[in-house]
Length: 113
Length: 117
Image (cartoon, rainbow over all chains, first blue to last red; front, top):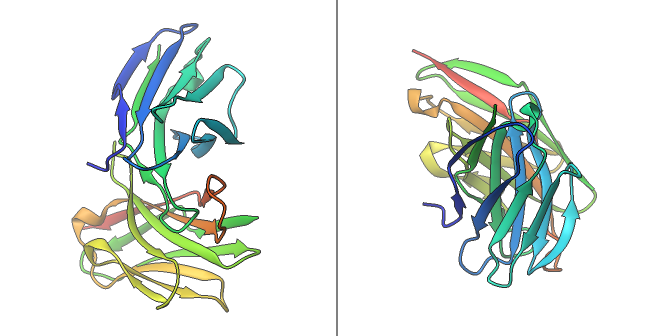
């Protein structure tokens, strides 16, 4: 158990639908990162939050949004889902500026049918 | 800005043979360097990291990596491969910064390691 909790572990939904993925960071970690991993795109950075504020944006589609709440958990919202959004979505958290690296959750596998 | 290049998207070695996974980095400031391992259908797990001090870093499962500044490399090795080492391995670099909330880990594209019985 890494200490980073992601729910749900698996999600199957239809095209056009909207889903919410949830992440609870490791205790004491203020930064949360979201990544998408697919076979053709590899590991893609989506977005980072630090203590409730958005800090960095990567290759995140406009149909996707995220937020970090006062209790530091984060949610990634995916809307108007397409088949190509099927992927593993990882959340990671960190505490120190750089030297501790990230701690990853076990991911949410999203299948869009 | 930092970047990482992993040479070889797929590497196959025989069980018991040396494992060598290559990673070269680019960084405008002294870096922190990491290797992560991902087993099928799991998240990324930290194998080892270099932050400061000794340039030969030992990690879990018998892996080690050596930071070579002159070669801008951080190659991952294991003397004797085991079937359980089959996984995907990611090299990553982070800048040495002191401002909270601005840390960023840049990942390589990964190397899939296959162990041949």
